Structures are given as C-alpha cells and as structure tokens.
Length: 425
Image 1 (cartoon, rainbow, N blue to C red):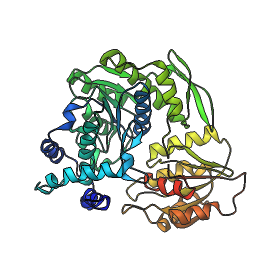
Image 2 (image 1 turned 45 degrees about the horizontal axis):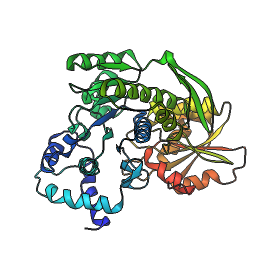
Image 3 (image 1 turned 120 degrees about the vertical axis):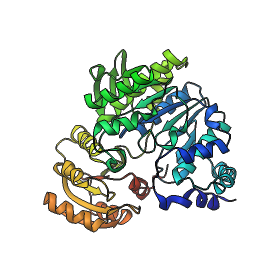
Image 4 (image 1 turned 30 degrees about the vertical axis):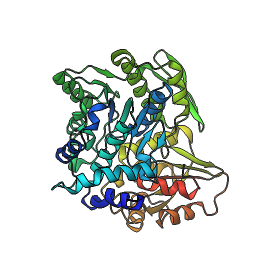
C-alpha cells in the first residue's frame, strides 16, 4: 500500500458524512486489540475554543517532558496534521503503515466505519505504538456519540464554551447541546469547564454529580487582560501574573484560563509533574493556524476559522479590540447549513465591502448566493469571488498599506487562504 491508497481507504466513506454512534468504532477498536485502553487522555469537547485549548495543553505537556499525542480536526492542508506526537505531524510512511494495519479489519466489518471513525482508530493505534504518556484528544462533533468517546474515563474531561451548533444533530437548545458535550464525562474523570451561561453550567454540574466527578469551573473574575497587540497578549489568571500568549483574540486568554485550570487539576489530582516554566514557555510558544491569525502586515491580512454565529461574535470582539474604528474588506465563505445571516449581520459594522467565496466542500454555499444575501442584508458593496484563490486575488487587488483584509466563515477555507500567502506550515 502506498500513500495514495492509504488516503483512498481513509476517504472511502466520506460520502456518508457524519454518522454518530459508538457501535462501529467500538467494534473496530476491539479488532485492533483496544490500544486506547493502554493510554491516558485529556478529552476536550466544546463548540468553540477546543482546538486552541488542545494545542496549548499539548505544548505545555511536551515541554514538561511527557511524550504527548495530539488529535484534532479538521486539517488545513494534509490529514497528517490531525495526529501529532510532541508537536510533529505523523509521517506519510507511518500513516500508510497504519492504513495497512487497519484496512483488512475494516473490510471485514458489515457496517463500514465512517471516514472520521477510521482516522480516529488509526490515531489511537498510532499513539499507543508511539508509547505516548498522555494524549490530548479533541472531540469531532458533540461528545456523547462522537467516535473519540470510545475511550475509558480520561484523566480530565475539558469542556470549552458551548453555543448553538449542529442543532439538527445535537439538539435545538443549549441544554440539549450541553448534555451531548457532557457525554465525555465518565465516572473517575476530573472535569474542567469554561465558565459560561448558567444554563450550560447547570447541565454539566448535574452530570458531574450523577457520575461522581469533581468539577472545576474557570473563574472569570480572576482573569485580567493587561495588554495586547498584533504580536500577542499579556494577562493574569489568579496567582499567575503577566502570562504571555502569542495567540491573539479576546477569547484566547479565556481559553488559556481553561488550560491553566486543567494543568492544576493534572498536578493536584493526577500526579503530573508540570513545572511552571513549562506552562509559561508553552503558552508563549504555542501557535494555532487560522484563529485570528495575522498572515501579513502590509497590507494587514488576517484569517479566522470562525464558522458559526458564536465564533463570528468572538471574531467581531477581536476586531473591536485590536482594530478599533477600522473598516475592512471581508472575504467570506460559508457552509450552506450554517446560520450565515447572523454571521453577516455580526461583521457588517466592521466591513467596507464583502467578497463572497466558495470553500472547497460539498456543503459550501455558492459564492453567488452568499453575495446576493450579503447585499440584501447589509446594503454594502459585495462581489462574488468564485473559489477562494480567485476571491483572495480580488480582495488584494489594489490594496495599500492602510487597507485591512479579513477572511473568515469556514475552517475549510483557512488552508487555501494561508496557501495564497505561501503559508503551508
């Protein structure tokens, strides 16, 4: 088997989309000898912020001397990005070898695993084969029925900010969605929750009480932003003073508070040895592409993976904080199943013009339809840019040092936007 054949095996069921449920992944892991049972996990669920939280935790744990696995989704350029050990992507050779091991077992299953289930199984096998001390595991969709929930009780179950998303699958209220996310909480796990609405906290507290799990909620009153610019931000959290974070955006220092509480729980309740130097150095070093990321400064171009109303509100908060009073060229592409009306209205006050693009996905809303909707809702100049590359070229045409371009609306277009500027790291 070569890499092309490995990728063909992984993507063989992509047409089926998401099929929540643990039956297929449990059967496949059993066939693989349940490698996940020989690993320790930090399991991270949430609507927004979970990728950044995972990246911070992985960086800190690696700097503390632990062999650390990191599993995230989706990828921006290559599927290899989804499985990392100590910050390094899985190699093509290792990915191919995993597919070679897993494919015969999948071929024998009457109910074929989905694309995400195949990737998850391969990742868990990979982390076991690499003898990881701990794996930071990001939930794909929801929590309770997500394939990552095939693991036993994690050392810590982390739940980041929760908002309405995938309401057709997870439920149409915050209470229902929180219930699905809280499905990663298992007896024996410690739990860390990002402080948020009373509705969400009530659900999570109830699940923790039912399952006998200790809960720690981040304390918003202990968070203080000291300074920020386009190169990073400095903040206090509790007794930790003047922490420096390279990631920018209002939400990132709040995500960091979740990480810091998780670090303390790992130390106090799980016996991890994590020097404070590893915490500070990890926060300073961590990068997470596509999250309020500056791609160039003259003219200023930023890309953000905000792809739902809650994420776009966070983006708007960042624009207010970092670029007050400035008007931007907005390059926007969305999936057709998103509440893009809400997203358009949220960013309209910051826009001088819009360029609509079509991300590379079967679920994408065509740029022409998005352009018409933007014009109808905002009355601002709007052009249809076609695909992402063409749209970015249109956005950059004639731009000078005082101009600002912001691309947002879908994680599926982040990679293409970054590639336009030669960023494939």
